[in-house]
Amino acid sequence: MNGGSIPRLVIAAPSSGAGKTTVATGLMAAFADAGLTVSPHKVGPDYIDPGYHSLATGRPGRNLDAYLCGPDRVAPLFLHGAAGADLALVEGVMGLFDGASGMRELSSTAQVAKLLRAPVVLVVDASSQSRSVAALVHGFASWDPEVRLAGVILNKVGSDRHEELLREAMDSSGVPVLGALRRDGRAGTPSRHLGLVPVAERRAEAVESVAELAARVRAGCDLEALLALARTVPELPDAPWDPAAELAPATGSEPAPVAGAAAPEKPLIAVAGGPAFTFSYAEHAELLAAAGAEVAPFDPLRDEQLPPGTRGLVIGGGFPEMYAPDLSANAPLRAAVAELAASGAPVSAECAGLLYLSRSIDGKPMCGVLPAEARMTDRLTLGYREAVALRDNALAAAGTRVRGHEFHRTALEPGAGTDPAWGLTHPERRVEGFVTGGVHASYLHVHWAAEPSLAGRLVTSAAQGAARA
Image (cartoon, rainbow, N blue to C red; front, side, top):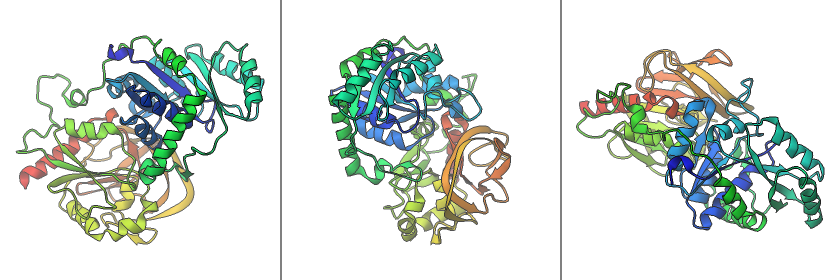
């Protein structure tokens, strides 16, 4: 099958809370259990849902965010992630037409569905309605003629009689009902202040939850009809995203300046993982490898030393505040991280990584790389940001412009160093984060596929350090 013709569906909803994650994850698991190779995707910047998607399918959960990466990269990133799959399922974000604040459809599920030329299946919370469901679906189906709303899955149905009334109402809508799921809390996924609890923190329970979701979907959805719908898609004309090509110079006539080929061996970049650091885009490791690095994961909760030969460090987001006592208790690793940072090696830290490099989290000692104290708060900081690098550093050249995302309930004092990591330009203007030596630490989550030079610059710095050593 041509890669651009990969069968695909977008699973959307009228609003948050309707059950998109429940249905999307259940469908992924049910189709995977049936022997299909399923490629999982998530609209927006969320890191947590893709963890459940990956558990359901055995493939990396990948994000499609038109704000962070640009609309032109959505289809190429999709094709890259879905290569070799029999079916691709894309879970939406918020309501179908909800996008970045004040930017109309940008980064909405509807925009991604149009960019992928994919039919939309709407998950409707039917718990407090009967005939009104048809009016709701009619409104969503007619709002944007370019969005192909091709089916509905009724969720939280109360009884056989309730389902009968809903199906009767939907008969006149012109949109087929492809499934009906009863109210059932047995397969719930627990949540806390930033959404669902990540898979890495509840692996055994998550496996059981995903299996139960698959069983519910098999019992309540017409899988054959859904698969047939997914196969009606046209071919996408785009070429798959290629990390090596992204790092190559525009002319293609010179060796990529970011690939550490001049080093005697590949520089080893350690990437933090485990339950405390679960927020990472799959493309980041792929870009690091394409730029010439050896990528080595480690778990700051368990490993007392960095991987042998570490020349650079990437610490992404997650929930260090939930594991502050355990992270603090691992004094040997904290000392190793501080020693690496003091050597001038490149260190990229986002959000949770920023907190881990601080002096303390809620009084619990951390790595002490940054002259700042972190604490939990009741205030949620959430939203897209535009930023610019104010000076050259190990991650970005001065003037590099990026789009990122903030998502946390912590505060750092001070919030920026003498040399800030970024100057935020929209929707507010302020400086943020820290640049010191080879360290670049910030609250801002950035998708490197939008700016591959970030990965290349990090690897180049690590390769130079390895050559000096």
